[in-house]
Amino acid sequence: MMIPKLLDDVLDAGEIDPKALAATLRISMSELAELVGVSRNTLSTEPLGKKGRDALTPLVRLLSQAAEMAGTEDRAVVWFKYTPIVSMGTKTAMEHVKDGNAGWVQGHLRNVYNGVYA
Image (tube, rainbow, N blue to C red; front, side, top):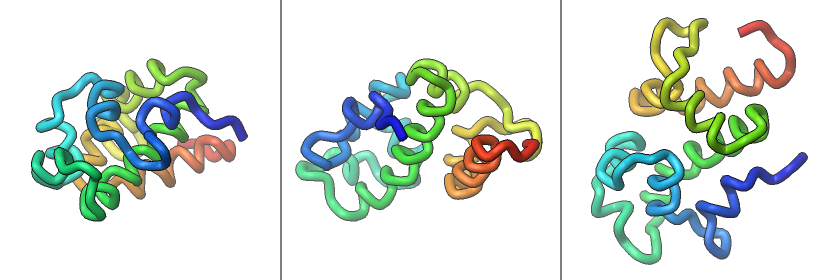
């Protein structure tokens, strides 16, 4: 399994870099904090604390999986932000993550990767 470039961009010595992740998604730090359900201050601490890591880790995994499947980081970001997951209504992956359903989106990606109709 190839390690997506996304991991190189947002991981610094094994630690998630919230600023790099926000830049990858082309959103502000405040929007990133809202997306994962924590305060902006939680993501601004250096080094990133446990609460920030716990909030961002599922998102990084999801985006890495999407980048591997989509072929490029840019395609993964476009899918994440703008493409509705039809099997779950009209919401995008980003909207599902914001609703606290990152695990469901990861499951959806696993199913698609394994050839299950989604």
